[in-house]
Amino acid sequence: MKKWRRIAYRAGRRCGSIFKKENRGSETAKFAMNRDWNLWKPHLPRDLRETLHEAASRKFYKGFCEKAREKYVRTISLPTDKKVAAIISFMSEDDTIFKVLDELRCLPLYEII
Image (cartoon, rainbow, N blue to C red; front, top):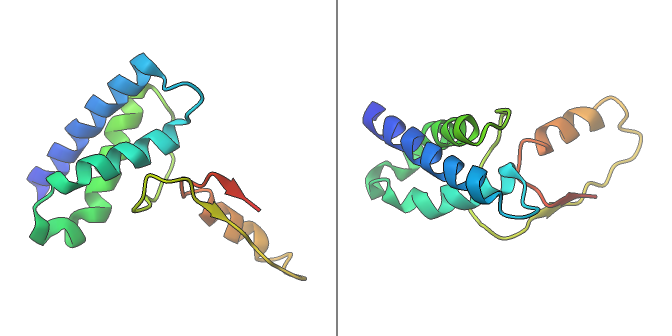
């Protein structure tokens, strides 16, 4: 399993260097990481995809950020390369809304409403 985390880290570095060179227009690093991760994820062995997903994606993201010279922040991958938004409905939730928003910021969301 360590082998696949190292491989994911190297793949993230490759994608990060491409992002740095191309900068992909107005695309943020968070969206690029998620898209590139979803394109690379099928390289993981089918029987290990579920058990390795979190650890490998974290290593992929760290490698990406290091090479792209982006600040690494905790990011959770989404299993899609499409734009995703979150709509939050709340009422008198002053003590919990900020915790919810902090967790949502870990996702590569296009918009939070």
